[in-house]
Length: 402
Image 1 (cartoon, rainbow, N blue to C red):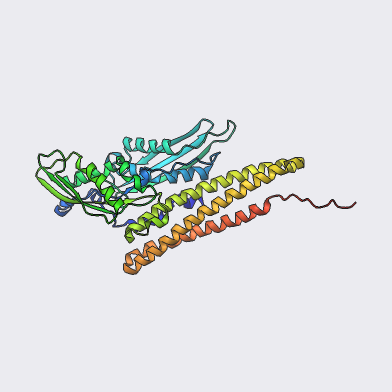
Image 2: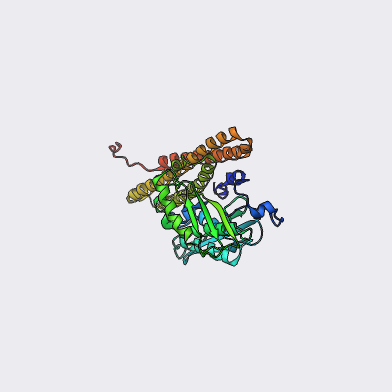
């Protein structure tokens, strides 16, 4: 199960192809005149960066708990890699994190390919802030887990400077969005609408001359547009002449429930579901780790009872077994939530494939992801049934006649 969780977003690469392609994805290829004139650097922003899901990790930490925790911060790690200052010149970046928990607490070692010192520091801060398992007992064996994050300029949000003046300003706007969290306060558990704006920059003016948003179709969307308008209008701007160009604000929210994406345009909804899948996969891994802890605790009491036959241990056996059943139930529930995301994604992809055959590889990947989740869910349900059957039952029947 954990091996599959390590590649929880298997669908994403297949689905992203062509969706967020940037000039940097072409490697060091010389750009055409048309490419140099095109306004780029307007990738989506995941609101989970503003409103991370704070969680108390099960204790003691184990591999499942650590893998789930590392997967849960994927939005924040990838947000670090949007900034070109955090990436090297290559079109793809690989980050490897090795986490260790011992009696002194948790440490995270960050290494990678195409990762700058600033990028390493950004990711280190994410891990130290959001992945904080409790220290182990003094005599406990250290626990380790590793996780890899892959970022591609073609398939993940990224900014590349130096293309043209409009793209550079757009890139600056995109990089600033993680500091505008107050604008998104009304969307902590949902996804904002796509917002379209027009920006006018004139030589000699320190800020944009004009920033105009089109009506969003909702009060909440218009309120967000008003907040963003003030932010963009206050940004430093420069041009050698005059610039007029559109900026399209696209938002996702990894923390939003599945149903919140129903009103999104189909292709954007696909990406939203993929981000939600990452979080349900993380929750499944953490729940798996919690069930492992409960099983270890119950087994220890069983072994003690087996050796002593002390009937006074019955209440402890009963309570620890119930804790095991409760943790197994939460594991099953987490996998059911993951199954729901996978089923919703597959249905959407099949609808998209009916319109465009290019979605065929994504359909195959979606079917495989759903099959794997259902396999894990079946195993968890069997384990839950076995746990329920293992719990001791006190008998109050009359004593047998001698």
